[in-house]
Image (tube, rainbow, N blue to C red; front, side):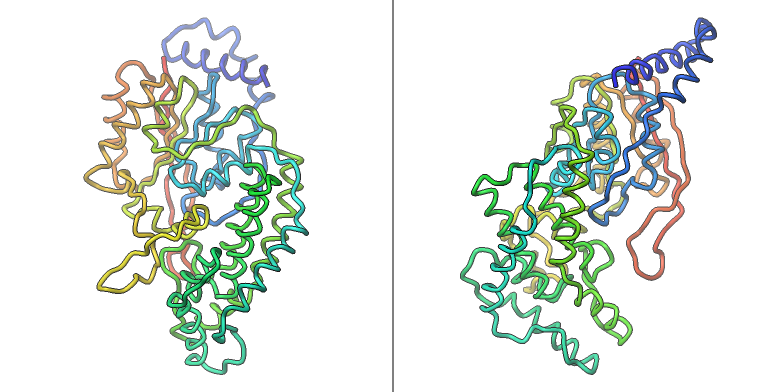
Length: 436
């Protein structure tokens, strides 16, 4: 590993000399290029856990190569971790500091960065089954998706599920069955979400799970939620059964056994973790990006901030709620809870607000400069801010202390839609800033 890092550092110096017009690099350039090819750091193959808009999983080679081109030691800081693709791909190569203000991101990153000790999946699911049975016995309403012969009857079942939001529950683990039944999940699936969460928490309380085991089990539950959801991959709004066709499609997801998705993935993840995860002094934080940069001293920052006017906290609020399990107040408009069942208090990113986005990038570049770090900044041509403006801000803020250039890659961006506009052609750009 030290040899690889030394090689990357040598390459960085060679490139720097070439750009400065120093011809001394010519004698060793061929040998360095050969060694670079031989020692090239390949991204690790890793299992993805959730469906996530803007995930860099499909272009991780481009991201990895960009980071390698400017890396000269220290940590690689993933400033906006999201679904933790960078931790998954590069967590066995570099010491990683992964950060995101959303708590679910920290749990997923932990799966890729922190080794586990032991998890008895059979006992875990048995406890969850016991909790499920007790909670199910408290619901008198007919919530089963069986025996319907028409669209009208199916929607009556949906309404009985959704009406559980008006029921009072005396046991603690009822957040999902109360707030989300008949939305992205059926009441049956929500009962299992609550029961599995209770079984996981029991192991934490009994000190059977450390942070790594807790994070892996919770991330697997996020996976089961994602692949049983009747939505389009996010939780901005669930679908209504307006036609027979949509009813049949929704019912496919209503019939999925969330507990099976959970236990099957958990067993896979336990094996993968034990075979692949090593701790290279990784660290995980849930800070605002400006506060995270204040903790950094050197290294290389990878930044993939949101670029659209919609906030990720709106699309993934249900995941955040599971991780916090804090019974949040739900957003109300016109005297009624909004269809999306959003948390009343959600993070609002300045990168998604047109009047604040320029200032947010000034803060980002300033933080990188103060940390003395290099920067690889992902950018797409669908962003709220133009590349020209972004370059102007970077040059004004970083000034003459950095060498700045842009590389590009064409790819399709998944929009998480089920019908039209499922993907868009996007030019993915990487703004690279290397400290001189």
